[in-house]
Image (cartoon, rainbow, N blue to C red; front, side, top):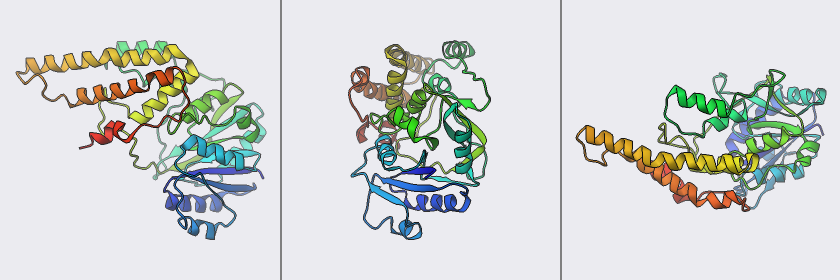
Length: 334
C-alpha cells in the first residue's frame, strides 16, 4: 500500500461522498486505501459510501474524541507507507495525491508536505505560510505602523533555502511517511480542535523539511463552523476554541515566556480598551457605557482564557475543549 488516506468524519457524509468520488476519479499510479474515523457514528448513515466504495475502512471512534485523537486512530489502522490526512470538505481536481507521494519519495530531505488550498472557483485561499506569520496575529496592539514593526522585529519573517519550503502545513491536506509520523508519536491528543496542525508541523520540522509544491492543489469547501468568530473587530479577532488551542500550541512549542507574554498583552489591553471607549463617550456627550459591546465581549473572552491559564501553563493533560457557554461568539451572536 502506497498511501493511506485518513478522514475524520463528524456529520459530513455528504461531503465525504463527493470527496471520495473526486479521489477515485483523479488518483492514478498509486495503490491507496481510504480510512474514515467517525466521531459521530450513526448506524446506516455511511451505507451509500460503503456501497459505492466497499473497500473503505470505517471506524467508530466511540464519540467526539477530537481531531487529533481521531487522526491517530486512523494512523494506527493505516497500512500505507505514506499517510495523507485529508479533510472531508475537500475535492481533488487532478492527481494531487500521487504527485505529493512522488515528491516525498524522490526528496529524502522532505518529511512532510501540504496542499495549496483553492476555493470553489479554484482561486487560491490565503493561508499562513510560516509559524511566525500565525504568531504575529496573536498580539493585539494599536493599529499603527510603529507597533506592527515592533511585532515584526520580535517575530521576523522566516526564510528558507528553497521557495517551496515552509514550517507550517495546513491540516486539511497533510502527507508524511508513516515512519516519520510514528517517530514523533503522531498527533498531540491534548488538542481537541485547531492548532494541532501547527503543533504537528513544529515537531515535524525538527526532523526534516516541510514543503508546499505548486502541483499539489485541492479545493477546500470551508464550511460554516460554530467555533468560529461571528463578530469581528480589531480587538475581538479570535474565537475561544481557536485561541485556547493556539495558546496550548505556543506553550508546548515555544515555552512559558511567549505564552505568558500573550496573556499579559490581553490583560494590559482590557482596561485601556475600556478607558478609550469611556473617554470617547464623554467627549461625544454620551452615557459612559454606550456602545461598549466590543469591550464587554473582550472582557468575557479574557475571563474565559484565564480559566485555562494554569492548566496550559503546567501542561495539564487534555483534550482542551471549551464548554458551550464559553463559546462567546455564539452566546452573543444576536
